[in-house]
Image 1 (cartoon, rainbow, N blue to C red):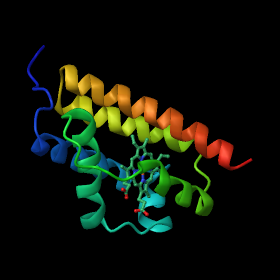
Image 2: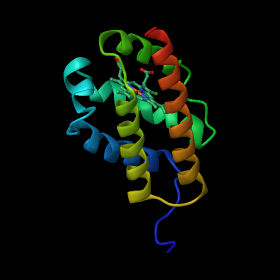
Image 3: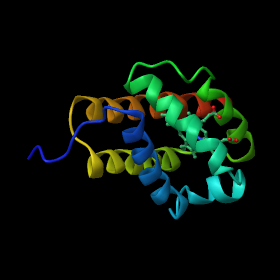
Image 4: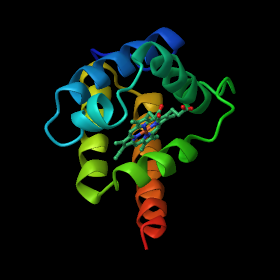
Length: 128
Ligand code: HEM
């Protein structure tokens, strides 16, 4: 239909991330990992994840950490399973589709899926 715009700014990514976490927080499969296992500080976490996506989607390298690292730590407390990744990807891609459409929106979904697949593989390997 072409009624939605593409992701073109940091503000767009902030909107996407807010919508994504709105769903994550109350999700039966993964919500507790953020609210109970990690007791995440959202004010600290949200700007980091926005940086991460800004680096990938807008080609602006503001995120300089290794995103895989925190998940290894998390995986030790709470082994991350296939079902967790599947739900994470579903919620992320749904948030993208609800708000945006276009090349960058498509790239967001492709990258989310490929990073999640890589992460799932690495975490499973770490559990052996
Ligand atoms: C099973 C799926 C996932 C779960 C349950 C999960 C959970 C979490 C949690 C709880 C944190 C906060 C850790 C902390 O601050 O101690 C975090 C951080 C983060 N996650 Fe995930 N995550 C998942 C998948 C992904 C994927 C697929 C990506 C990338 C596409 C991603 C990107 C990030 C980034 C960028 C951070 C911030 C890292 C930093 O502190 O610099 N996560 N995740």
